[in-house]
Image (tube, rainbow, N blue to C red; front, top):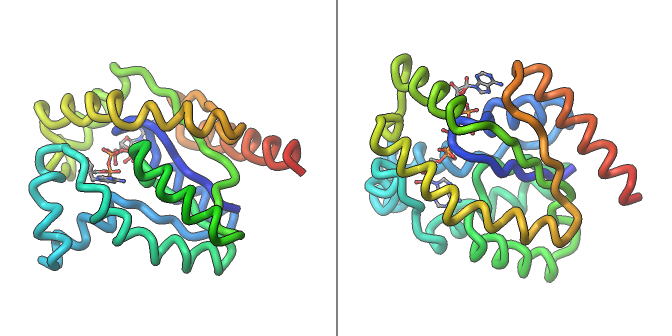
Length: 194
Ligand code: AP5
């Protein structure tokens, strides 16, 4: 199974991706986690990415593609993946698709779009900021991340909808309820495609 989560900050991509990876026995690949790991380790990629993460801007496509590419190929060879946060721009999606056309067995099979209203997104991100928090969980950066999602990531949905891959899920309910809805719709989509 090869899945992609597309949703705004705070919608539950990471929360659900962990559960989906466990349910389907596939790898969870979070671009944000991989980037934060590079920053914490002080690698060359981390140094390049740090200010983008802190400001809620997207890290340049070339940096992200070079970081994620090998992980995706490895996961695809081992049974699949749930991508959490990559591709996140139309350019990233087109580049990933071009690679998938050349190499069979790595292309996406479903795109999970979590739909959560702005008030609930803000409530969740503010709650996390007040607890553990991330460098980008502060009021100004949270608002900027939501704007970047609208301008850079929403156009991806049209790209994937054109390929019949998108399932839209109400992500406002309790975690387990959202998880069950995702699995039901992904399994139904996969059955339809067979
Ligand atoms: P990334 O790490 O992907 O962060 P994000 O998109 O801002 O998303 P979040 O992690 O904040 O939210 P989420 O949707 O995963 O929700 P979560 O499950 O955590 O990216 C960070 C940065 O990295 C970007 O800004 C950019 O700089 C860079 N980057 C990453 N990918 C990139 C790419 N491809 N290209 C360029 N740059 C890239 O949940 C949020 C909170 O809500 C949690 O506290 C959780 O417990 C809670 N919660 C979740 N579900 C529920 C629920 N159903 N009910 C109640 N609470 C819930």
